Amino acid sequence: MYKLLSEQEEFLASEIVDIAIKIHKELGPGLLESVYAKCFYYELNQREIPFQKEKEVPIIYQALKIDDGLRLDLLVDNLVIVEFKAQENYHPVWEAQILSYLKLSQKRLGFLLNFHVPLMKEGIKRLIL
Image 1: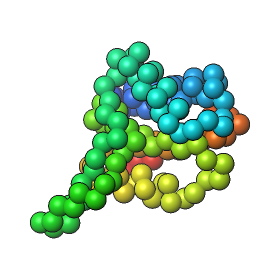
Image 2: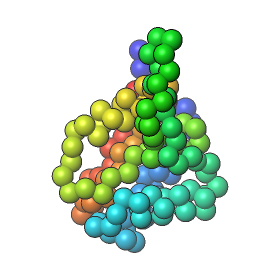
Image 3: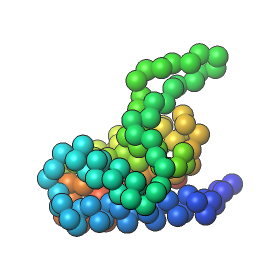
Image 4: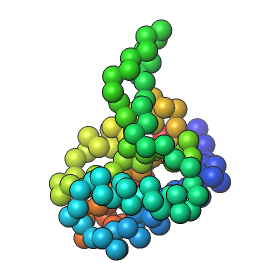
């Protein structure tokens, strides 16, 4: 059965979308992923929203823990995963990657933000597990 997102998850989702649109309006497409990420961190700090960048995600298989270098681009308030992209062509594997991260980290909400689009709303993909 589908469980509704918490108020905090919904609040963070709204902030994440707002920040992405704000950055894209000011900078436009065509820059490196790292530039958009740094601007995103800045905006989260300005809004006093806690986050962890480059958060490691271990893989647990039965009794085996595998630290294989999986890293989330961004974990917002220990609740929402954000992955940054700045690529012309969309790749469905990006969604699979975020869904895997959600499962492995036991989170429910993730965003794929691709800044290489004419309008940012076309580059925002919200994923719920």
